[in-house]
View 1 (tube, rainbow, N blue to C red):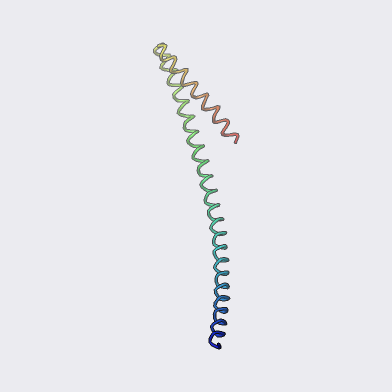
View 2: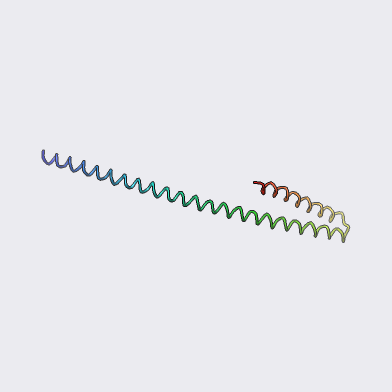
Length: 109
């Protein structure tokens, strides 16, 4: 009977210790999770910022290339007076205008 009481007391103490340790572990995990979530959020903000900068650079370069294509297409047409070259120059201008309209929408966001 005494052994049973001692065993019961030890079991209760062990249970309390485990609960205490478990509570500390849960709190440690909760703290680590909050720190990691903040860190990941900051990293994602950096990725978003970098992505916007790359997108702006690529669109800017695309605009420059389209302008060059328009100038070259019109110069070729001026030399050849070929109707196909006229179509190509007009098409190049349409692509440039389309790009500028789309870029204007993106820039406003």
